[in-house]
Image (cartoon, rainbow, N blue to C red; front, side):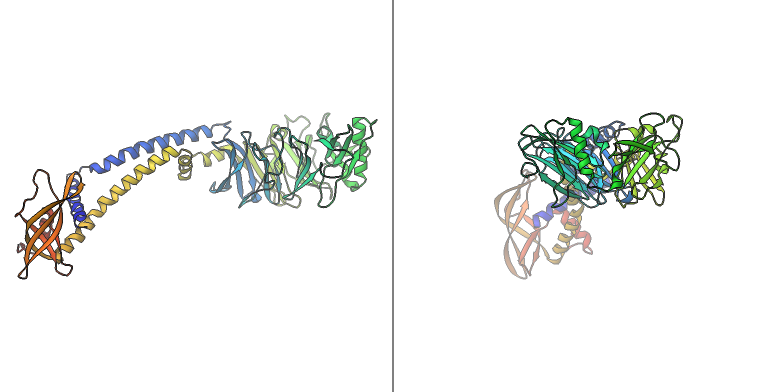
Length: 550
């Protein structure tokens, strides 16, 4: 400890002289220059990445969605491994990042079958190892509903559709297993077609009748059987209840078999559910009522104000959004529309949100409208470009653009730099090592005066006297290329001759000799001697009043 404090004192006195001459200590420069260089490299790499991700059309952002009644934003971004998506929850008013987690996904990101259930966002993705991922994102967590149980041979062949807020899956694992699954109100139900007694022969393939699905008041599935026949199945699942099935006669044509199955299934549903809303293909393109039983077109749906070139968006089991133009030629008008409750036959004007959009936007395949039954919030998302929401009772609307997101996500921040460093491990390790060396050196130099003061105080508490070196021996230790030697010194205290061992850093050019006199401080209580260096002797002279007695 004595020799350590002595070394500290030497460093401190040298540093004190250097500061008086207004020069930067060499120890700082040795460690600080590499840190500056590494910081410059980190900053340039990070800002270049921000500029690249923030460019219009960048594929870094994979989706923007509102949630929690418009209070939060869910932002999906790609990760470096291209095997996950990063899900970030942001406060929609400030852009503050609330949390960030990863979900499994291949390079194509989310599948285009997003829906809202249980006040949460349902994001289906595909992973090459575990198949379909059904990620239910709420304000505080991400729940994976499938847990690897919905394998498909390929994400392109996995049949997914969203039918009035329900996610339906017609699965083919690439083997003999065929299944049908449904996610409704945040709950996953799955029916194994191969293991059931639904069909007279083993199912070999299952598909949605997607080209004609708007003709029926329910999703219709077509099942190929091993014996060559075709069966049809109603696309709804209920706990402990098997769906309706009809096996086509061998002489029935494709379309006849579908219609006969639909008519059989329709008998078991409410009459008002058979009246569907269709889009008029001819000018001026208004919405009209279609009777699924008689297959007849009914009257035009009379909205409070006309909606031309209409687009129909079924939202949930009771509500449909009709959006279009205020004029027969959409280029001359503005976008308007209504939320239609089919059960109550009531209209709610939602033009306050639609009027802020272009007609091309509402007809784009990347545009989605979402509303849960009983909810007051109508959500809107246009891929990576815009998102919005409307409180249909208070008529409060808010739209959010990707440019605002760029201002939040692609401006320098401590969290962003930290994320960049975690993705560039080698750079982070180098920076951490040099920072640690710099901090250790800085702390060492800052605390050296305190250690020196403690030593001076301890030396003053002892008896200051001279001693004679009577023996020298090597310790084998070197500090700053100077050998540390063991000295046996002899001195007189209270009439007694005392021998004690001390350690000393010596110069190779001027080593101590036997018989040489040295200054020591002798602690009578601990019976321990401490060697006093020239610098310490000068400091002791300043501390004591008048010249010392030795």
